[in-house]
Image (cartoon, rainbow, N blue to C red):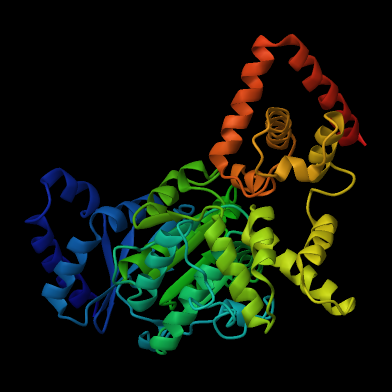
Length: 470
């Protein structure tokens, strides 16, 4: 059997020698030793981890072609990597890495593949760990997420067969990353029931790996993940600084990618901004498509509110939907929290959901509350100073004294709140963002040329500062 193993490898070397430069051949192929031939699986020993990684990255396709030409289509390749050369009287310490061509552990007969979730030291999962309530039907599309959603849907229809592999989706908190990747996983399962889809958070992956190390089940841990057809890893930024975990994920990533399996990841920032991750891992994150999720625009927020309320079987007036969409312009999670609170207030107080109830609810859950400076308080303060009413500032009138007061209130709204320009305009009678920009610029210009006007601004500002300091 050993003679056959050596013979097969020598034949492979003859084919490889014709395809690579002589120096590369001597450097990367001559040190390799054939270990065993089991059926169509050839195990080769490489002298180091670095050596293995270099072969995998630069020459694996040539190796595979030579094996298929020598053994046939059933050819498989496995590595025995020398991790520690050992003492003079002891054998080198090696780690076996499964075949890059294996389709799944189901075809790897005779080898026990242990699910790391099922080890005594680890928690047991339920199926793919996907949340069935997340789907593409409930994921509202807008300009803020169109690329990511379209790419995700393409991946869901043909996992591992598009150029979006890996698919990296990044964005801030509450923008829908987790919803989207669960939707991708659920779509794959619905249409390709034979595919093994697995969702795992980065924290869970790290915890499993640590427990596998402690229980000497690292090989089983790795073998399990190599079975997966579509691997979804959430929040990969938490891999930063964890070198051993990164090394394990690097090997899993390589094998899955080379086997045509789909990899989907999320992060709170773009790959180039991730800290504490090895360059070789970051470079792989960029192989496929990187798509960002941005804050939802006004129209998308309107659609989200409408869909959420419809799903709850609740009908609310359009002016309430518009008010909420303009007021909560940070992220989807905060918006959904507002809707839940609004539904609860309406139910507990046995009231219909109207604009007044929406405003009362908002005071309790966003930054425009009594202890902070909000647009409502700014309007009251400016109106008082100029002996006007809040309604005057929202009116359509073009009277000079009212226009100036309105511009000042817009200026301070931009200065003291986190509202977008669009949202500020909405709170001043439904004006657009360009009006707010003009107001801010006008106030700045007048302060430059009019000392009395500048003093007035300072007086109002002092009152707002006292309020904000409480």
